[in-house]
Length: 343
Ligand code: SF4
Image (cartoon, rainbow, N blue to C red; front, side, top):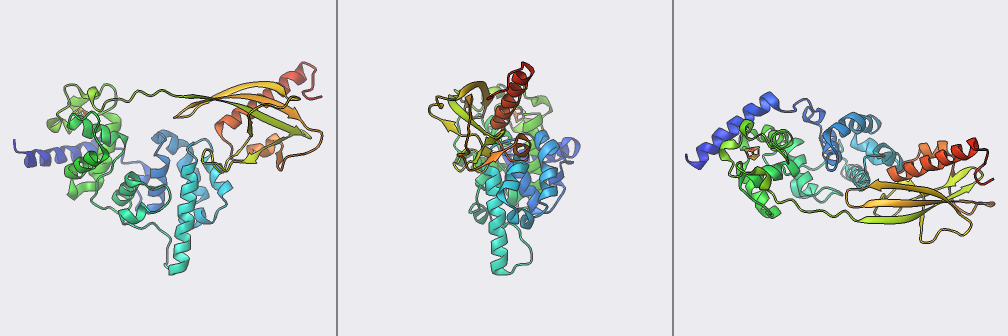
């Protein structure tokens, strides 16, 4: 069979499949407003759909319903709404992008604050790379361009038996396969097929609308080659400084966990400190083990001290949450045992 008619047939099968099985109810697929579509794209970059839907997407939109509301909000408030979602640079970049758009609106006296529709202009905004720019163009501005995310990449690799393709090759294939007339449904369908049929393990090739085109369906899990990941381990000493029943925290300024409040790490714990215990946390790129030490001050030497209640209102990382829990558990244990910690 000639390649063009085959591609047409496959496009038709994909459309039918999407009509029947597609996750059409997802809220960001039922709006024409670029803001929630952009927000969903950023949230979904490193996070499962269910987590985003159940815990983050709606509360964030309620708190910051527009680009203006987000751009004018204090960064602390944005970080608080992002708490627990991880990859905090995403929140920082969302905030920066919204602020830039507000600024541009003021300068040009445009009527509404929104994203540019051009892919290159989108890529000039903080935190928007080529994949996100294509997704925004495709879903928010209904342009006839393909999208590329992990699920789509896996499908393309399997269709063409590619083990380690370059991004250039993948984009060329993505453009050549696109159903230009029905690009919105095609792109959503490709992501859903990757998430539900062309899964990393045990793909369901017999139910797949791309099966007629797929060169890799005999041994699909060979494509692409899985990179063996060795997750490095890092160890840190964390210092809890207590004064007047309050804990010292500072706001992080480095790239990692930027903008969140946290307990400082130290090379060597203070001689007068006591060992509290350890907590660990698995990030995507490394595993962190924190050995936690506590030091009771008689005079305040730090800039910011907070009660535990006040800390609960701050944006802090998961690992710092675990440290607060360790602190509370230890205090409770020692109080029950008749010994007041630091007393
Ligand atoms: S036929 Fe199988 S391997 Fe090929 S795209 Fe469909 S699910 Fe993936």
